[in-house]
Length: 88
Image 1 (spheres, one colour):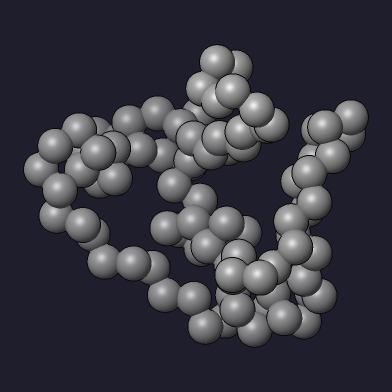
Image 2 (tube, rainbow, N blue to C red):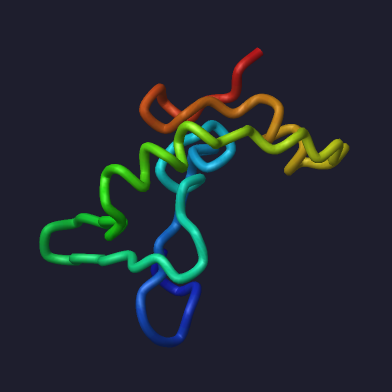
């Protein structure tokens, strides 16, 4: 995401992963997230047992009801692993 910030790195997410129960939806305040630029990896430093507890308790957030472009995105975008295309 070059050019968006003056200092440091920026990690951008193009998928609705957090809203669909993916790993981003399991991150909590205070969790340690390790970013390794050389390996091109981001790791959530939380024990697997805790992630399973969080996953079991996860409920998707309700739709925002936004009528603008972000609402269209929210209602129609597909996961990055499936091409991040708009669904009909």
